[in-house]
Amino acid sequence: MCGITGIVSLDLDNIGDLLVTCGRKLTYRGYDSVGVAAVQNNVVDLRKDVGTIEEVNKRLGLSSMRGDRGIIQLRWATYGAPTRTNAQPHFGCQEVFYGAHNGNIHNYYEYKQELIETGHIVRSENDGELCVHAVDKYYEQTGDMFEAVRLSTRDLKGAFAFAVGRADAQEIYAVKMGSSLVAGVDKNITIVSSDLPSILPVTRNVIYLRDGEMLRLTPHDVKVFRIEDGKELDRPVELSNIDINAAEKGGFPHFMLKEINEQPKVAQDLLGILDGGNIEKWAGLIEEASRVYLVACGSSYNAGMVGTYYFNRLAGLPILPAIGGQFIPMYGATLDDDSLCILVSQSGETKDILNVLNLVRENNLGKTLGVVNVIGSTLMFNADSYIPMGCGYEVSVPATKTYFSQTIIFAYLSAMLGKRNGTLDESEANRFLNLLRNDLPRLTRETIDHTGILAKMLAKTLMDANDLYCLGYGLTDGVAREGALKIKEICYNHCEGMYSSEFKHGPLSIVTNDYPVIFVTTTEDSWMVINHINEVSCRGGRTIIVGEQEEKLEPYVKKEIDYLTVPKTDVLLNPLLDVIPLQLLSYYLSVDLGINPDQPRNLSKTLTVD
Ligand code: M6R
Image (cartoon, rainbow, N blue to C red; front, side):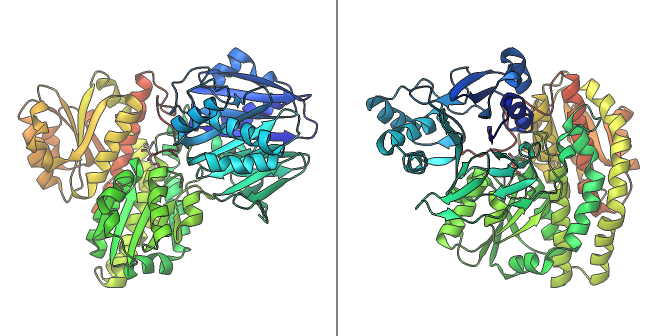
C-alpha cells in the first residue's frame, strides 16, 4: 500500500521527470492519488491530486516540475478519503518541511490532537501528514534535522516508512519502521524508495535496510543510522541484477496477461532453483517441528491450501493452514519452541504475516520458514530460512505467477519430504519430481494456449453473471478458491470459492435456471465431483468444468466453451494446471467488462497495514 520515492541530485534541474519515471514503477502500490514535492532554489513546489499517476501528471504537469531533489508519493487510501488535501506529500506547519509516508500511524487520532493543541496546523485527515509535523516539532526543539527525524519516530506508533526534507537543505531523510524501503546510490545522485523497481531507472547500486534504521541522502552518498541511538551503520552497496524490463509489458496489453504467460518459464527456473537450493535446511525445519502451521493471505493462502493437500498426500504430514490475520487469535497460544510457521508471502511485507513473524521472533516461539518472492523484503531477511519463489517482479495486482510458483514449491517439498520419511517410495517420488522438472513447463504452455481461446469465449457469456460459485474438491480445493478470488478481485463479480461437497449444505439454494457454477477437478476426484455437478445441473444450473477431458464429464456441459480442458497428465499435476484457465477466464472477463485487471479499484499489491 502506497509508494514513496525520494531523489537528491547534484545538478539535475528537471527532477519532476525522473520522479515520475521512478514513480510509475510503484503504480501497483496505489492509484488513489499522486503528488510530487520538487525543490528548486530552496523553494518547494508541491503538486498533488486524486487519480492515477498518468492522470495527475497530465492535469498538473508533474513531469515538468523543476528542481534537483524531491519526493513522489502514490497513495492507497486508508486514513482519510482519496481527496486532494489527503494526497501526499504534505507540508509541515509552513512550506519548509515536506514529506510523505507509506504504512499506518496507529496513534493518529491522539497524536493529531496533541499536535493541534501545541499549535500545529494539521490540514488533512491523512496520517502521513503527522510524520512531517513530528519532524517539524523536534526540529523546533533541537534545531538539528538528523535528531528531529530520529526523535520523531518516538511519537509515531505503527508500521510505516517515510521520507522527509527541508526546503533549504540539499538532503532527504528516510525512516524504516516496519514498511519496506531500499536506497540506491550513483554518481552525483541518490534515491530511496518503497521498492526496488523504482530505483532501477537511476542506479543498480542498491542498499537494503532493516527496520529501526534511518538514512540521510545527499547528492554524493547514502548514510545509514540506527534510530535507537543514532549510531552510523555499515551497510554494503549491492549490485542488483534484476531485469529492468521485468517492469515493462513486453508487448502484452496488460501485466497480468504477460505474467500468466511467464508461468512456463517460472516453472522451469523454479525447479532449477529448488534443485540447487537448501533442501536439507528446509526439510529439516519441517521434520524437526512438533507442529507446523502454514500462514498466508489471499492468493498465497489459496496456494497454501493446495500445499496442505500435497503435504498430506505425498508426505503424510499434517500442516495446518491459517489466514495471516486470524493466526494469532486462533493459534497464537499453541506456539512453543518446537513449532514451525511457514510464512508465505509474495511481497514479504504483508503486515498480517509480519505480525506472526514478530510474535515468533520476539517470544522465541519456535522457527519460521519464509516462502517469498521479493528479494530484500522483511520476511526474507528475518525468517530463520526462506525459499525463494524465483518469479522475478510481479507487477499486476492480481497474483498469478507467484501463486503458481508457491504451489510448485509445496508439491516439490512434499515429494522430497515423502521420499525422506518413506511415505513415498523413492521411485515414485523421483517420478513425480521428474514430471515437475521435465513436463510441467511444456504442459503449462499448452494449457495457456489451449484454454486461453476457450476462456476468452466463455468470458463473453458470463458478462451478466454478477454472482457465481467456483467449487473444488481435494487437491483442487485451493485452486477453486483462487479462481474465485481472481474473478472477485478483477471483475467485481461476487464469486465464492468453496469445497464442492459443502455446497449442498446451504449455498445450493441459490441455484436457479442457468445459474453458473464452475467445478474444478482432478481425474482422481471426478467420480465424486459428478455427484456435486448433478446436484446443480438437475436444478437447471449451468455447470462449467475445469479439468482433464473425461468422457464421463462430457454430458454435464452444454457447450464446448463450458469445458476448459487441461492436457492429459499425471493426476498430481492437475492442481497446478487447473488454475491457468481460471486466471485466463478472470482476465478476459475483466477486460470485457472494461476494467483494467492490473489495477483493480480499492486494492494494492502490497498490504503493509493491519
Ligand atoms: O504479498 P502477499 O503474498 O503476502 O499478498 C497476499 C495477498 O494480499 C495477495 O495474494 C492478494 O490476495 C492478491 N492481490 C490476490 O490476487
